[in-house]
Image (cartoon, rainbow, N blue to C red; front, side, top):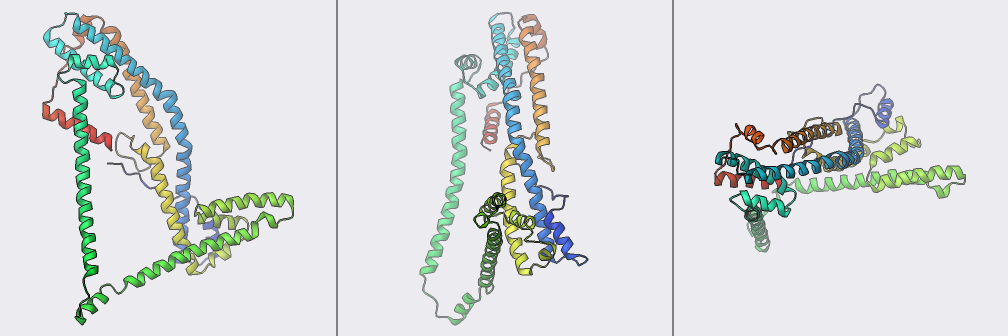
Length: 385
């Protein structure tokens, strides 16, 4: 299952629009619409800043992966291959007892399993088949069968759901074809099934149209004042061209907050005008701002979800680029420690006597066939997620 990405916390900072609204209200208590307006713009500001932080961090993370993580991964793979070769020579040396061979074989297959996940070089496949009762080709066939089973379960569920939807659709069509009853009580019951539904739908449509009209009104007011073609002064034309570009970008993106901020910037909107906005206008603004906030939060989830999936445990409440950096630092530290151990083992295990001493207390735990298949199934499902 995808891990939940927590919502950004509301900003502790106050936006220019919030300050302007508070100034315009003076000592008066803000109305519910004004409170919602302030809350929405504060939330949008917070998500904007968080998005900016993540966007700045993405190339940093990618660079660290290329410069730090990938070289370590390559070195780990090389050392694992070297270790596998050393253990293979020890198995062929004839100096190990059957019990010791079973232990070394278990270590070998564990290392080969890790290596074959990221590359099936012929040498590794040969060594796997040399020590495993199940050939690598058979392992792949089992995995393919399990994946097919997962897909079959999913498609079966989809087919059932589609069948139910189709049945519902047929039922609806059958109802549509059914002749109307002559029973006046039945007709009245149909008329009064949900008397408020049409009214609610009309109100929602009216609100959506009002929100769209309010957005256009803000845009047109800005465009009428800032259009550079109407400006004779060259310097002022350059300034208005830049401002008009920002206006167009904000309007195309449906960014009402940016348009209102521009109005404040060019003094089309002041504290008094903002505080004196009609209730209906504020309601329309709030509707647009709520939609804008929803889009921003969806974008934030899209940006952060790949990082959230990399977390070793539950996603912390204050999930941030710093959290990801700490996780990456911990991973790199662990990889370096494993690399040091592998290098030491490659050198030491060339001495068969040292290898014998090292595996004295090593225990081989072989799961039964059902348990092995269950583990493989779980790993495949995790990989799909």
